[in-house]
Length: 309
Image (cartoon, rainbow, N blue to C red; front, side, top):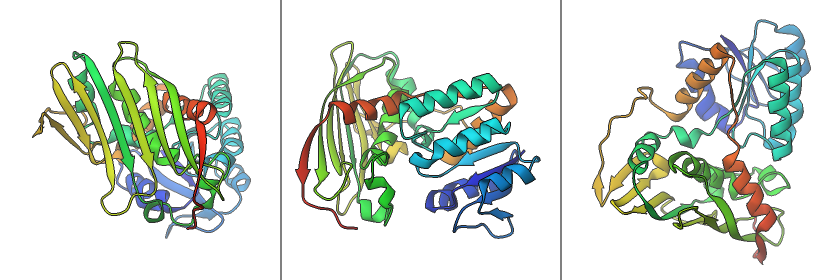
């Protein structure tokens, strides 16, 4: 199938383009961007023009920031195209539910991608936890915003989510591996004096069986970057490391074969999108975004030093 990639920034160039080029299910038919382009691929600056000229392109993959994405996605769906959304799938929950309703009405596929769920050991962790009693789960997600999101000012504006832009990756893993649903009970958000969104956050969750579930997100990390999830159970302690790339149980490397033979987070996302289009399906799990929305609603804000990129 031919696919168009809208928004040619760092994540598109680093991940999406390589996943599409490496797939035998997809062909990159065109891109849309005000500045970026991919060599030897037809590039548009006007999204409406692409929709008008390229009826051969059945699927649109959006890598735009979340705030402008809704209007583009509506246009794509109304033109009869299937839609794939980079995380987070929108700026608000209401936007996402509106897209779901529209896709259902038009019988089109819609996919809210959570790339961290496709990390190598996430499925393994989910299988390990399914028959165990959770006592506590602790998420530690600390990285240097200047290294991973340089000069991306939209992140600091309303709808940009701040530290929840990477934090939602952790939440997408947690909601995938836990066999029960949790919800936010308390949050503290640290917001730079000169910004609109948090640079750090501490979260607490209600677990129906009483387990202590917490998360710490921080964009001020220097040196080693930390992306870990520690789950203490009645049958041992599981550690997901490096954002889900490695797994250990009771301090030892854990080996369990995964059914997914594809390598890499984004190739797996595009394989799932191909399956959704073939089946006429919709995959819009909003649980990670619900946690972020709850944190922004319930969180106690504390002002911290200004942040300058």
